[in-house]
Length: 418
Ligand SMILES: [Zn+2]
Image (cartoon, rainbow, N blue to C red; front, side, top):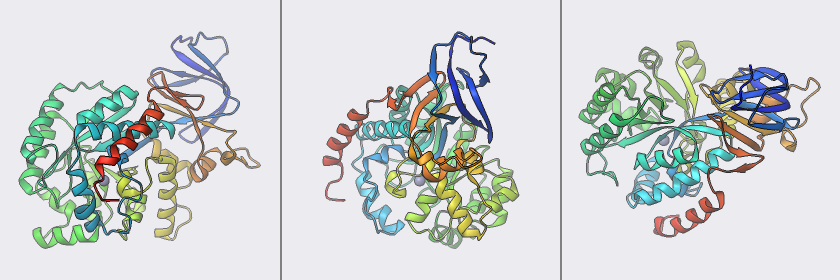
């Protein structure tokens, strides 16, 4: 059916759910696509002969404004030292302006790498929300809650009160949604976790938490409570449907079943786990057996050392799962691409003339494998019928401004820590 408000790509390759289509396609504003008859009224027509169209990438665990930090920020520290001697003292200097600069740079990097959504956890969440909104992106922005002194709030209670206000005003159709990000079981006491969970229930909001990331975390939790972190969170009735559990690496099978029972989403963050040498990462076969929803996330630039490139993260997810389980059949390209784009309503369009996308193999079907294992330039990114990037140029964010703002900000932000 003719649809004026859409774009036609002529002679393009499109993949959705692992199925390939070659020809003229219409991308509709509501996120659907259809075959083109060539005579529809469209707002834009693009030669697709060098283009691969896929669903856009979705990043399910980020600290976007950490783009302020260099990728090797305090490289070589253990997680414990990294938290206490590097990132926490640095973050004590955070203010809304630094967050605006970091989130703006993050939006530029997301768009450049074909990602249209981030589930974030960081200070001054409404600042990040405003930046993503103006960049035309989608977000599930978690306001941080912790008993560790926050740069934004004197205590967890005041952080929750402010979040309550934000959540109250939220509408279901907003592209930017807010969530409640309780940092972890080691930075939130039981009362704080319970209050956050009650607020999630009251406002029908999602919770986001780092859980079972390291052996130290799980052994200390067990020592203190007699339970492992997910068992402990279950015992205090913390989980609400859709709780986002970042890392979820050092877990027992009964804990994985608990995540399924609570309809939680587990987020695999391979580069972060490897950089910090957690010695373990989410065990995908066990999660698949239990039927848990699993997504992929980059974590923060400062902790993962990998920025926000979700193609690179998906590649690492595939490699580490195979390596850890001695199983070369795990996470082939189409499957890991499905994990990295799950739930996307948006479109990323990749450059088939990028040398990294060649050869396409004798079958001519190596598109997703080349994309995942070698990367490619994102030419166009469509969200809700708007092109945030077109012909390799981002329009909704000024990249050179993002760069100069970052350069200016880090002068004062680092204060002796490199
Ligand atoms: Zn994190």
